[in-house]
Image 1 (cartoon, rainbow, N blue to C red):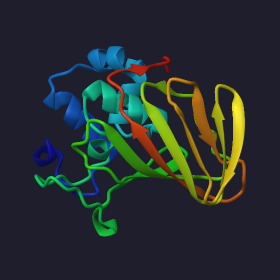
Image 2 (cartoon, rainbow, N blue to C red; image 1 turned 90 degrees about the vertical axis):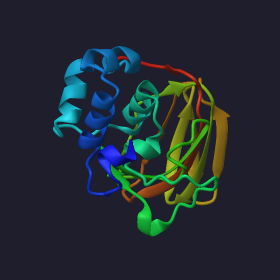
Image 3 (cartoon, helix red, strand yellow; image 1 turned 90 degrees about the horizontal axis):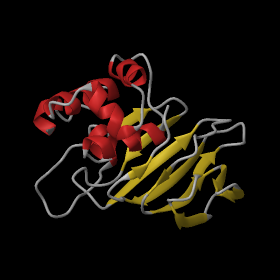
Image 4 (cartoon, one colour; image 1 turned 180 degrees about the horizontal axis):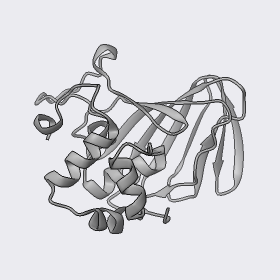
Length: 193
């Protein structure tokens, strides 16, 4: 698939999403059913009119059977060892954050992303199979898991079962950066958008 979209960091999320969907001969309706995202919202994302949130990008990666790194346009290699070099990473600008995939784009069990949250950013609650580990690299964030909010600052970490409703927010006036490591379940529990 990397031949289809290339490894050009300039490829937009819209271009990449559409390429993966059409390469799999899937309709917007099929992706909608698998992801829980409305056809209209998918169409606006593919046309570049909307940027996906982290939650929606995760739902799409699972529906399309690809990693978040692949959706970010991260370069792939045939090596058994994946090296994530800062000069080669693809960054995705989302609605309220910036995401960089640090994982091997071919990984089907574990994903690591660096997420920079804009001031005031409040994520949508997400639930998916697996586990999640969040480590604060810069700034302060609040993480809600099943309604219990935990404030974290640089150096703090939180680990939880991802089947619980959870989201990360930046309650401050400055950007915050977190490292999120997720084990990938075989299916996601999705809410409609």
